[in-house]
Amino acid sequence: MKALLVIDVQTGLVEKGDFQKELSLIERTIKEFQINGDPVIFMKHLDEEEQSPLFRNSKGSDLHVSLQKYAKHIIEKQTPSSFFNTNLSSKLEDFGVSHIFISGFNTEYCCMFTAIAAFDRGYKVTFLEDATATVNSDETYEMRGLDINDFVGSVLYSSNAIEVLNNEEYVEKYKVNNLN
Figure 1 (tube, rainbow, N blue to C red):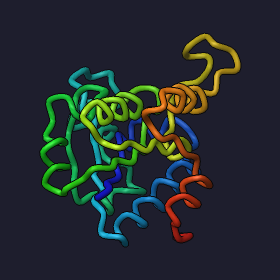
Figure 2 (cartoon, helix red, strand yellow):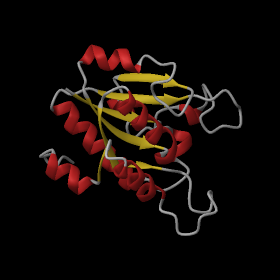
Figure 3 (tube, rainbow, N blue to C red):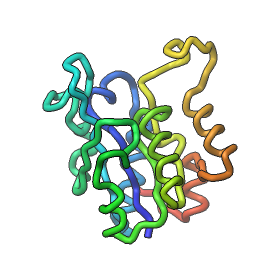
Figure 4 (spheres, one colour):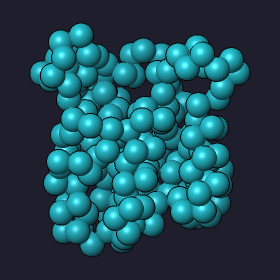
């Protein structure tokens, strides 16, 4: 069975930019998984530092309103890996999951760390490159012209361990219906 992880799609991150395209792709993927009876698990990052946009019990830590209605399974975490000190492994085992699809925020942190951790635990992993987003830019890393999603996707793809697909490739390979 497959499962979709929706990582850290929280108000404190989503409100930092224009992420309509990514949110739309994530929502479409959630609907497809739900129609097929496959689990969708939301990860929710909670920080203890008050200045964090994801400070525990703040408005910023809430799941973004655009996707809240789909959140039947929510797991809280405090590190970039969705597996570290959480019950994600047991939840996936309960569902009989062997294939994990990755979506959410931030591409180069929580999405990438979770993809690698899932592979290390023996899961087949598909990283949905354009259904991830980041609040960071080339300026954040002082690397002019850096496309973070493309870079992370290329690194993961080059590993020959994690499948990396853009939306068109995903729709074609997994015979996804056009849901709106």
